[in-house]
Image (cartoon, rainbow, N blue to C red; front, side, top):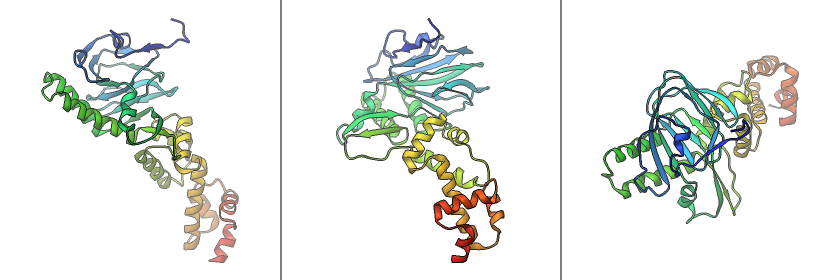
Length: 299
């Protein structure tokens, strides 16, 4: 295979996953019809995957702690990612991925046809398409518990029945739509962006570290995204680029400190992470309409 080609895997196809997971599956629902949802439970020896994509969406749900982090490409960027019970990887359909692990890796693979997502909201919303976000979640208790519940259902020989599987599937799709997707509507136009819990996490981090150098890479890593993808979704959520948002927060904090009158303008500039007082004054006047000194005199 040429180096610029990417292997395409179809989970529903015969032996499709064997091309990326050579050890074979410990458990799977190959003999059960779960209507577009597929579960495979793996224990893989140290292995380097070929670069590949999959025609289905995939969730890698970890139920073991891996002694060393997984090295993988995620949204085109190399990452070193620790693994523990509850760690979840969301790999959208047709997303290129590659990974290497140097110790035994045991995990649940949940794959599903993209139509399962849109089916959940087709009756209530005019949707062009649903875009699943490529994310690494350090912990998602709900996805973890659903993965374990479906694994137990298979191990029991289908004791809960198809309705139980359908209920788990609906809960999983609803959770993914709420926290891990961007939905494009026909009308009315809505604001898309980061899932609410990720946006809060990033915003809280910004406010807690205004006195430090905040880089796009740092914030994107916090959200487990590539810098370009994070920047796009952050602007959709806030109306500002990450840089513009940080400056706005620093100026707002500066107004509060100026009103208190306990610090000089130079001290405030330094406490807010500005390189020098004139840098602070420039952005303050641009956003507030007055220089810091004029703002103090107006109070």
